[in-house]
Length: 437
Image 1 (cartoon, helix red, strand yellow):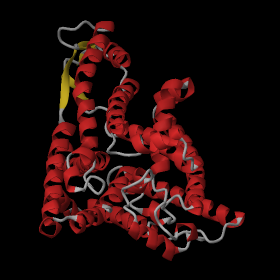
Image 2 (cartoon, helix red, strand yellow):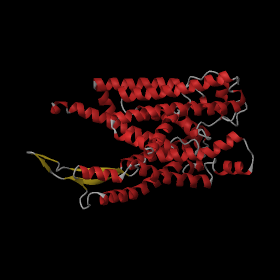
Image 3 (tube, one colour):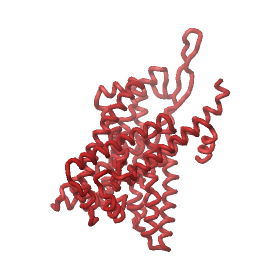
């Protein structure tokens, strides 16, 4: 990886792209520290110092915002509204025929779907911003902080509207910065901003583990967390790169005096075909009951049960349900994102076939069979990785501070591998430029 970046900096146009990407990252990180108007910044800092940034029902959103959520800054919502909007549009593409037709239209249809994603992102930002302001005003954002009720001293409607508009504008700005990286920088802009947001929380989380440790001044706990994190990185890299290659042959065809086809290729089916989406789905679904209890403020039996079993990450009910939801959503997302019948029809249309399998319906059934077989280990792997912060380090008391959690490590490794691949592919294009001429 370091070699690829060093070679990229020696290439003038790639160096410009890298420096442009770094500049956007600096702007993004500065925005995560600028508080929105109407917030008592001193009260926020007092509460943040008392709270753990990775705890509570806002942990996932806070992680994706790089810690800006609990700081209540202009980029407090981060890219979470865009991620949610993208997932919703991707699911609706399977359900709504109009969106499915747009997806098949190529670049023009994709641009239209991207525009719909932007509109939905702004709508979700307004909704989430309103919820965050209401939570901050009520003091529920920091339940254990004594000055939580002083975070928003001015309760007027005008101040509330200004705060919501500021956070919505911040989300739109983050979306624009991500698109700038995609167009003029290196890699997928949204993925890189997500990578930076998560990586920004690592130093503070690791130092918190060291300070809370009891063995040798906390260094034993610190070293254990780093060792487990490195092991998880290696495991994730191994599984993320693993794939089942389905061989495909294309029959030779004669058109006039020229022959076409006669080549061999393969269909790569990844073991983790769903990526990190099932973990995000499962986490979001488990946060809903806890949110309802927090906003309701009820002390009834059902509220107590939800707090003790669903909101508590150590509870057996939470762990079991979280694992089952991840497995379910892994199969669900693979089913809607990969259509074996469509792949089989396209292969048949262009004269392709899998050796030993008849074209058409038998090919679709074979692809579906193989996909189901490799999705099982992929879904179990996702479930186990996501539960590491709860299970592996509970004895050290670092389960909530563990920075190498399932969602974070999957995103960081996936984005890192994809970015390095793009840099290497562009370097190869420039190295082989003389042969192409």
